[in-house]
Every structure is written in structure tokens, then in C-alpha cells.
Amino acid sequence: MKQVARNLTDDIDGFLIGKEYLIMDRDTKYTRAFRHHLKREGVTPVRCPPRAPNCNAYAERFVRSVKEECLGRLILFGERSLRYALRNYVSHYHAERNHHGVGNKLLFPNDVTAANDEPIQCQERLGGTLKFYFRAAA
Image (cartoon, rainbow, N blue to C red; front, side, top):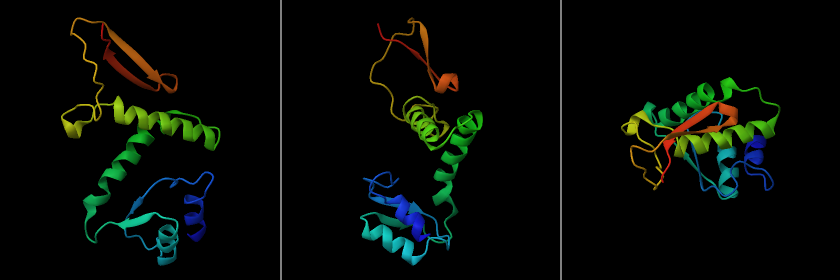
């Protein structure tokens, strides 16, 4: 796990570059040395409270969504294609995908509003794996 912490905080391609917090559950694999290395690199490890199963539910749901809606439908050829797919999915997830938990609305809707009589257009990501339908503003 010390090596994982070094990889996460690597100066060149570390996942936690520019991040302030890492939210983690209370699994024993996140040792004191792991958390100490993160703190030394400027990332504050935040552990979920004990006996609070819903704290991790949002992260688990996101992982399930990305697997079902994106990664399970693609053939990936290495880390570069995985990063490309995840970057596109996150953009789609935050700006184009309806969320049931917020009344089937977009998390960050576009400020441009179109009349209901405008034609419906489709925007595709990842070769049509992810689609977003919208009405174009005149």
C-alpha cells in the first residue's frame, strides 16, 4: 500500500495531483503509513465514520454506473484508452446524463434554453456508446 500511495501522489501522472482530499472507507488496507504518506504529500485522507454504510454508497453507485454504462461496452487497449473513456464518461455524467436522485434532472444544466418547437439533436460520445439528446437554441 505504500507503493500505491506513492503512485497516487506521483508528480508526473499521479491521480491525486491537485487534489486536497481522498475519501476512503475504514478498510484495514489503508494503513497508518498509507495515510501518513498522503498527508506528507498535501492530500488529507478522510475516513468514513464507523458503522455508516451509506457514506460509501455514492461512490459505489458511480462505480457501478461507469462499469455498466461505459466500460462494459468498450474494448480498451491500455491505460491511455481507459483514461480517455473515463474522462468522456465523467463529462457525460456531470453535464448530460439525467439523474434519478435529483428529480430526473441534469446536475449542471446548460444555461441555453430552447423553445419546445426546436428540433431535437443528438450528441454522441465514445462512438455512440453515450448519447445526449437536446433541443438546440435558435
